[in-house]
Length: 277
Image 1: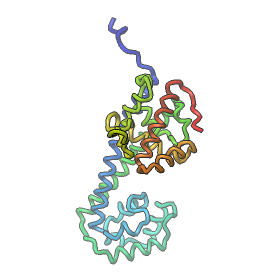
Image 2: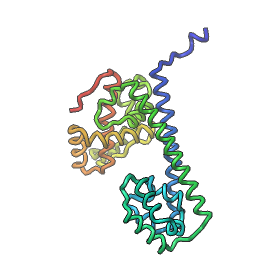
Image 3: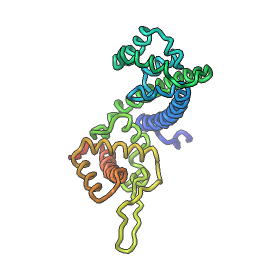
């Protein structure tokens, strides 16, 4: 019967497919947000070029967005009541900004060489609203990924340095670990098998990582390796050894990611926690 020929899909498989779909949507949303932030920066540079240098951590903060939505031009900031401007900055930044800084900001706005453009001010407020919407969507996506990871209680989370989101990216891309009969196949899928160039007895010191396989998994594993190196003595020692050979930081991390893949393959295949120390 047709029903007998259908492949059985477990709830675990469905969760892994959900993780992959959610993370792909997450990556797309992050790219959209990044483009909008670049666009916002260019518009603010035209209207109020001095602004991004006034804030230590740049324009892209909730507190900066809050007052830009109300006063997107230097003229609007300069004419805003001092008490209102100070309260807006202090409240939206959870008191990271002071009333004295609000006064400095208003003086800066009055001296600004920026163009007073009503069309640009509308676009600034519109883009900020779009960025805030994407932030909200990202929070929902990451919350759902975290819930799936907590529900599955994957052995992967026993590795210090791998969080729910990065772990979700890795699990979602790998899917069923039994697709990979050995660690080398998983390494190839992650694009982490070294493309070694040899000539006689010479072996290149700066080997390049293969570009085959899943770029998302490659990124997630290198990012995970970066965190694991900071949290695990064995990986830290391995990283230092690669650096001592004259490798670049990214190349050394790539080798650490390869070592991490072998650990992950063993953990997921046998469903056991692995003592990295």
